[in-house]
Length: 394
Image 1: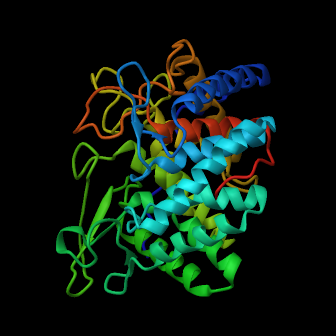
Image 2: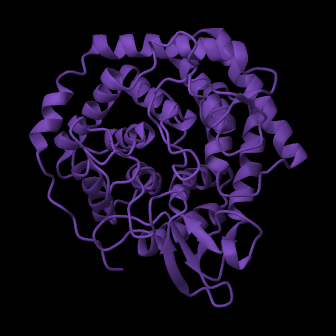
């Protein structure tokens, strides 16, 4: 396995300077503003109704049923709000979402794709870890089975989407790095090593295919369904096959860190250094990434606040013994500080989004919007700073 090169971090002083501005008072004010948006959302999204993946132009999430890949982020936000405040209203609302996820699994509503961690990790796993809900645990384990059952022996990876073995979907996706913790958790709960074995194999395959020699990443990678031979890396949501989709790079910054942590094995940490330094070195003047890392100031392209929020969460998990540890911690604080200063929607009274200027899928909607996943990771970062022992899906 040939490791990618690791860029030297450029202009480190800008991260330290901005990090100094993230005071406890600023974080508390940001959290209070976020909770107001969540409270407003709780008036709209209840009874099995969830916020959509993205907002309308007023930064209000339209209502949707529990049938996509993003509904777990709302559940996760409610569990974070409950832990941060101790207020029963958040727990009650979170438990209502868990009931919806149980119903979704029972009815088999779009539960056969790779995003089981995003869905059931942030809802049922967190419910079990926080409250001891055994029924939530049962359904979280069912979701882990669904994820593990997508493992392809030919190619040694978890197939992301679509009908199993279909040539047009015989591929893995960088996002799945964030779902592997569900498999490590399932082994912890059951003692069955199959989950962890699949996660480790998929991780190794991802490292060997998704991460390019220069530390940038493909979004998705195809294999030959007949032989399992590696075919090609392409994009689905980035600008081009040879560009670097910002959110994909941030999934690697956070996902690799979570997976190494869950394995207790940092032997492949150089891969994390490579993808992380690429992300930081391509951050523009206000630090918040453009939606694809080939773009920067003056390009006319939109940013993606979700990518920077996700990356911040990954940076926060760096260990004191890591190279450039203090810089990574400063970068995490700087990213969150810039989001607070420039991209919160607290001033919009009707808004249900926490952050502005996200991009879910530029090729479909090339204008800034709120993203529920960006909101979740922004809130997760605030929660971790304010309450270091907060329980997360990890």
